[in-house]
Image (tube, rainbow, N blue to C red; front, side, top):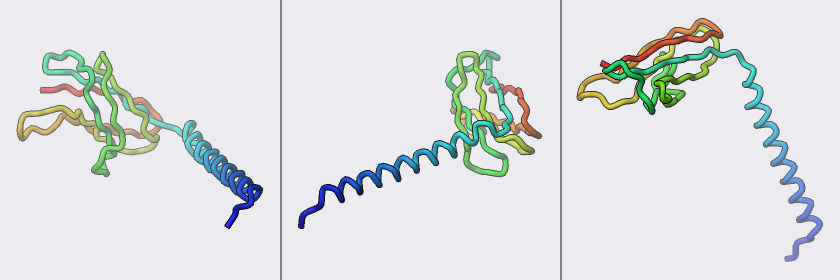
Length: 125
């Protein structure tokens, strides 16, 4: 059985067009969220000596969900920030650090009403 080169070339062109169209659709979907309103959670994490902590993994989840949706790392000033959808919601911010056996990880619940910035700090005990 032989394959007609023109037929093969036509099939490849169709596949390339389908791939390009699907890529454009995905790109337009992701870009459509760029201008959605958001709230900004801006925090600082401090150690027991009240000095900022660098490189701490911070997880953020909606209070009504069990799994974190976002993970960020604190910078050299102990600061971290995450955009979340605007609107009334509670978010649980947790410092993912080693704690003494039986001790809970430091966490804080932040309430967001709309497209706003919430500043807060986490202090390790």
